[in-house]
Structure formats: structure tokens, C-alpha cells
Length: 457
Image (cartoon, rainbow, N blue to C red):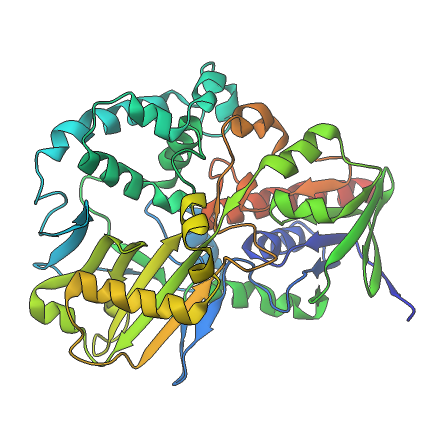
């Protein structure tokens, strides 16, 4: 079969939030001829949905708009997509498991107030480290190399912590989808400091109305649909002073520049001519991701509230967190959402379970019963959105190993000739999250537009 040859000003590899934002940015800067290529059969990358049988969807990937996010709400406003704040139901108790014991708490750690004396110094020390870091270039901080040698586990060993306090801390950082032995205190401090805004009062949950972040993806992708190639894994990229040529199984695409908006680790599957510099190849080997899964159980009513429970639970039978998502809808049905963090410890211990969606559904229901008591009614729906077996996503969260940030960070956003890098991991200062994806896409679109417009002079 003869491959189709195409020509464009800029080809964007990756149709996730960052790649689509880059394409939009290119057009806003006067480069209309843009082509997007993605290996998946859909747009959105780590933003996608789980369809419900009666209509509607659940967000399978990125979902929440953190208080620190600025660019995501701004982009949503540009696209006419509404961001809404959802206040939690008050006056109810959360569930927390500590050493296997089920505790009920109206306030954080209310059942074990003595833990605050242990945890306070840890949080203060971590805040001091975070404050010392350059938020955009943490690797340039004088102490970066030293901090990057110390794992989170080893750093916590320096405090006199009870098993209960240690469990709280390790649960707090499970969102990294890495075991405490797998990430450095440099990365934990950097990631935490830029991803969470400090507020005097708990910030309300912010969500995208009318379809979640997938509504943003749809609004971005719609005008670009005729310039998007799906089911097209990139096999190789030739690049030089005059432009680039991208090869897929069915297409050869000539362009003046390429924006690469995929996770660095995935680029190990792509052949580059000439070969990328050794530092860039090393980054792609070492910049890892941690997988995870989201689970949803739907009931006719939010029955846990009748028991005085909020629907929030942590550290329940391998489910890192459970939360009541009923507040997002009209409040008539009960919706519980759970998250599993893909640490290496969990993957090794439960590898067969994590590969079987039906067993995951059963495990989620067991966790719900353990947290909130026997179900008075059968769930009408149970869904699993697992990223453990997604071949085009190295992980839900970025989890570079110790040493990677300080040694390879300077290469992360470093463009190479006609190759411009985007992706959530390259956001400034956000090194992940949707905010990082938008920041990186706008920066990359502007940089690629400069290359094209310079050629036109």
C-alpha cells in the first residue's frame, strides 16, 4: 500500500490537552496550517470518559480544577466552557483507616489528635524545602542534588514517627502513584508546592460543568477535526535545519516544525534521524509515570448520608480514596468514586487484580462496605476506568525516580532545532496536571509559530 504524503506548516504529535492547546496557540499566532497526529482512536490523551448506560459519562482521567489553576479556567472561558464550584455536604463524618482500624472523623485526624504533634514538624520541614526551591527550575536550587538523592521514605525515617503518623503521610502522597521509596524529597516538595494553593479555608471542589474536562477537549478538537489523524502511531521523525518529516504506517508528513506533546517515556518507541542528543534520550528513559485507576459505583440514593457519613474514606482495603460525587449531579442518586494509586508495591502485590476489571469492581464494593457498612441497595452501575493497561499512557501522574529531576531536569523543556516539546510534564511551573498541559501547549505553540514565521520573512 502506498503511503499518503502530506504537507503542513507544523505537525503536532499528541491530541491530548497539551497538543490541542498547542495547535490552538499556533493558529492564534498566525499559523493556520497545522496537522495533529495521535496513536489513539480518540482525542484527549489522559482526559477521557466512561459512558453510562442511561446516558451521560464519568471522567476516566483528569477531572478536578485545583485552587492553584489559572490557565485551565482561562482556557475554558475562551472556549465558552463553564467552571463550577461544588460545596461538599457538611455535618457528616469521614472514614479513615489507621492500622486497619476504622475511624470516624468530623475533622481531619479528630480521632487521633495526638498525631498532629508528630505530623506538624514534618509538614513544616517540607514547606521549608518547597519555599527554598526555584518553582520553575528546581534543579537550579543549590541543594537540589542533595535533596534529589534522598527518597521520601528515607526522609521520613529522619523523624520519630509512629506507624499511624507514617501511614497518614504515605496516604497523603499516594496521588504521586509511586511508593515512598520511588521518589525523591526534591520532587515531592516541588510537585506539592506548585500544585496546591494555600488557602485559609478549604477551597470548594471546582469542576467543569456539562461534561467535565472532556468538554474542554471537545471544544478544542472540534475546529481541528479535519486536521487530525487518529489511529496513527508515529514510527519515525527525520529532522534538520529546513524542517521535519514524520512517518506513520499510512502517512509521510513534511512540516517546518514538529510539536511533541506526549510523555517523554513514550518517545523511546520513535526513531529519530539524526538521533536525539544523549541527554534527551536519557531523560526519556528516566522520566517515568505512575499508573492508576478510577472506579465508580452508582446507587439509587446516597444512603451513606443517612448513617451520618460523608462518603469520603481513605486507605480502605487498597483503595487510596473514596469520595461522594453525588454532589455534582442533581443529588437524587448516590455516586461514590474511588481511586487506586499504582505504586510498585501495589502493582507487584495485586498484579492479577489490577489486570481484571471485574475483580476491581468487586474489590471496590468490598471497600465501600468496609468504609460505610453493608449496602442497603444494590448499585445500579459499577464502572472501572483503569490506566494500568493503557499502552499509550506511561502513567496518570509523573513519577521521576531519585536523581532524575536534578540531573535531567534542565533537558525537560529544551527544544532541539525544529523539534519543540510540550506535554503536561513540561509546564512552567506546573510539572504535570491539566494546568501544566495548558501552559506547555501555549508555550510550545508560540515557539513553533516563531520558527514558521521566521521562515516566511
